[in-house]
Image (cartoon, rainbow, N blue to C red; front, side, top):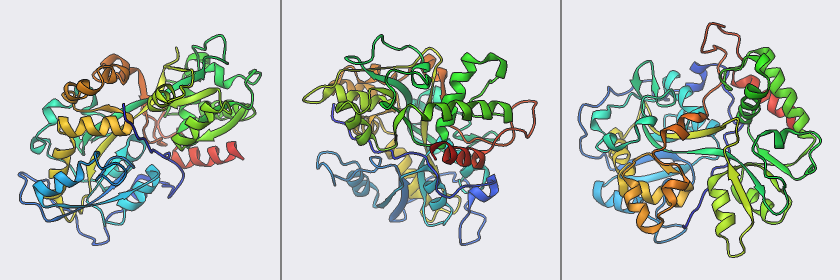
Length: 394
């Protein structure tokens, strides 16, 4: 499998204190276009914000190119702006200069509730029927019953270790939170405020007295328990990672032997010319994860081209290309028929279509002050998460 994965975190740029502020809005001050009822001719251009690897035009590998054929078919010239974090995506969308974005779940609610994202007419999405049903009508792409995008792909955050060093094989996240770990200084964790949810997920299983039901909806007591756990973990962390190439290298050279990973990092280590003996699992407490959605700006200057792009990027052929290049589970289930010709194990490895596996994941979402239950507005919002994460890292 040939894979390239560049997701450099969901970090700390442009903190939003409230959903309205997060939305930003267009500089033109208009109320935005009405939801399209049909796709017209392309406007000749498309300005999008993407994770690196989502809009390839052969710049890194001439055989990896789905932008050029899109431009040839539609006449929509693509200008893709790579963003390194979800906060950067929210900030860029707020300028009104872009037609759409490939947003992760810890950004999408800010775009929907803040008025930046436009409602999407799913009847115009030609591949929508083939999208994994488990990804549809979710809080990260639907708001107040209205669709705001089309699912693109998803993945899990896993526990990985070097099998030649870490013994016995761990089955719990407790292995990375143990202050007395024999692997102190060689443990890694994901470098982002959203990682607080990983600690909360672990506490959900190990501290039932905290009554954590959702790792992204934490009241003061629950939040402080998670922060305390992470501060204790800080004493055994060798390095935090957001660049997958550095995480891969750290495992390869033994600087890191245990910690959080993505499936693609595991694959790259195992498939290298000099394979690194690693194994990755979803521990018994479960895992967090992410799902990306293509969304259109409410003031998009090129809405027809954006719809044409969403239809193009979700075709089975393009989905198969992106999934293998980027390293993720494609949203379009028909992509697996194409991928299997090159890699029969890919869709099994990435759990494509496995609803049970997907539903066990606590997918990234925006932490809000309003808890999703009867507690009311007593949960910690994203600004609190960011402040706490900065304090943890010192």
